[in-house]
Every structure is written in C-alpha cells, then in structure tokens.
Image (cartoon, rainbow over all chains, first blue to last red; front, side):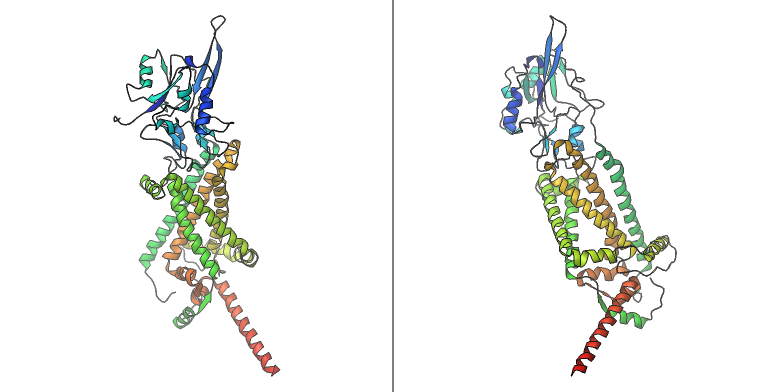
Length: 245
Length: 259
C-alpha cells in the first residue's frame, strides 16, 4: 500500500458509550435521514453479571466499511462501491435501482432502504464532512468519546494511537467469510452472536438469476449464434445463384 | 423453396413486379424499435458491472461510464430512453389497436396446420435433410414464433423496467418485486436477443431474404420472393388484384351503360 492511500475506519470503545443516542440524532440531521429510518445504531446488550457486580454494555454500531465488502459484489449496477482513495463504502443514489440485494448481502445488517427514496441507504462516514477535514457527525457529537474515526494507515492518527493504547482489540467476524471489517472495538469484548452477525445472504431471485436466467440466456443466444455462423459458412461455400431469386 | 418449377422468363417477370407489404408507420416503428434496442442494449450492458453479474469486459463498462458521465448518468440514460421507447410503442399499438393490431394478431399470428408442418420440416432441413416446405402466409411459422417472443418480451421488459425505474413507490418490505424484476428483465432481453441474432443474420446476410430486408425501407417485396416464400399471402394478394380489376371494370361498364 502506498503512502497516499488512506484507510478510514472507526475505533469504538463501548465502555465509554452511555446509550444517549446523540449520534443517531446527529447522523439523521447531518445526512437528511428520514425519522423512521437510521444509518447507525446503538445496541443495548443487556445487563450482565450478578449483583452487585453488574454491568450493562452499549455497542455503537454502523457500516464497517469492509476491506472486501460483500454488498459491493452483489450490486448489479455497481451503485455501491468502495472508494479506492480512502476505502469508504458509498452508494451512488442516481445509479441505485433500489433492488435491495445489498441488504441481506451485508453480514452486519448495516444497510437499509430509505423509505423516502426507495434506494439503498447506509453510513457514508459523513463524506461531506470528512472531505472538509471534519470528523463524522456521530464522532463529533459523542460526549463520551466512544466513537473515534480516522486514517488507520496514518500512525499518528487518533484511531491508530487509540489502537496502540488499547487493552484489547476486536473486529466482529462475519460467519464463514472474512470481509475485513474496519470498526475496531477496543477495551471491551463485544459478542457478535448477540448482534446477529450472519453470513452474506442472497434472496431467491438472485439464485434464479445466477443459476437459471444467465445459463438460459447464454445457451439460447449461443445456440442461435452458432447456428447462424454455421449457416453463414454454408452460404459462403455455396455462393450466390443469380437466377434462383 | 417451393416445389413448383418456374422458368427464367417467369422468374424475371415476377421479380420486376412489386407487391406492397409494409405501410409507412410499420417501417418507421420498426426502425425506431431497432434504434432504441441498440441504445438500450449498449447502455444496459454497461450498467451490469458487478463482478459476479457482468457480461461485457471491464474495458467496455468503463468506456460506457465515461461516455455517459459515470454510472449514474448511464442508468439515467437507460431509464429515459427506455421510457421513450415504451411510450412510443404503446402509443402506436393503442393508436392502431382496432385497425391494425387486432386484425394482425387474429390473421397473421395464429399457427396453422401448415405452420406446424413447416416447423417440423424446417427442423429436418436444418439437420441437412432435403425437404419441401409447406406454403406460408405473410409471415412464416418461425417469424410467428419469434413474434410471440418479441411481444411477450416487450411486455416483460417494459413492466419490469418501469418497476425498477419507479422502485421508490414500493415499501421496503416489498423489495422482492424489484429483486425479481431484474432477472426477468435480463431474461426477457436475452430471449429476444437470441432470436434477434437470427433476425439480423437473415436480413443482413442471408441471400434468400434480401427482399425482406429492402422491404423494411421501401415497403415492397418482389412477386418472385412473395411467391416462393409466402405463397398463401401471394395468392391472397393476386386474388385481391383480380377483385380490384373486376371492380374497376364493372364500374366502367356501369358508367358506359348510364351514358
């Protein structure tokens, strides 16, 4: 990797989260997300332990901006793509046809359909702010400093320093596939099973497309093409007869 | 094609005689449809860029995206041209529904006994057997079958295309409608394209169908072609000519009698 390629990611310390959900509000306001929808979450993992040693964990959560995002692979129009320069996974709203294949493809269920536009919606790491040198809205607003954001390739960045100083680091693994998620949970163990992280999934329409439609079309078009090519070869061999037609 | 023997003189006489096959609206619609298909196929193939679904090489996909100012512009162009195509085709069908569409569907599209026989023997012919083909109407059985593929294909492509264009009207829990539209859209296009390969080869390269190609510009075919390839239609046309002749003569006689 060259020096000028950035790799943006989040470093999240769940111990610092108090479940105030100001990040959800900030995100909604910054990105014009409809009230009945959200791009980011805070998961309440419930009370753990026995009295008096009780604890309750809250897990700030959003798109992991994976190294190998399964949502990008399934997008028919490549409306969803990973920016080569900084690794942020975004959706080109003009190119999205709203098929929703990316929703089940995401093992982290970090994507939604925007109820107003009908198109795929997700955390874009507040690109408009990041490009101006600002932190994403959720990070800037977090009073406990639970959410950090920055360039993981830059050793002096806040995230790199936090990772070096962390007691423990965990990336939530997807089932059966390593997508290279770029949220690093530090100083606390986050149970991915409780967060229902799955394997990438595809709806039946996708299997129909891959196993029936594509082979069928290739077979039919291939057969007619070969048939016509053979007919053309025969025609060339035979030559034209002026008096026949 | 047909078994009858025609002398060279007869062939030359028939070749000089023109019979009208297509009206102007028919011709314009055909070429509008062809141009639309070209644009929509090229842009459509450029949209399908995902590594697991793409058909064209990455170079083509990048080129198309550059040309239309990014994937968004490409998708928008595809949608706009698709809607124009759909609008014009629908308008033409509705406008000529009673005068042209219904009679065409009832008279020209139904498969007759001869058509079934034609398909059987054509199959044998393609396998290299020498056969005589039964007489055919204005469109042969193969053309009729492809007509159904094109008609149902157009309907499927239009409906699924509109669903994907206006996907925002479906609530999130009805995504399956949009998800199923994509394979159906692609599958219908694929089936039409499979037949289109035959259609284009026949028109552009196949010597016996040259007349049909030129008729898509002039509207006319020569009588020799009509007689050899579309005997039933040719006989109908000749009967119409005789009837017209008779009618004109009768009027002439009536006019003379009144004097």
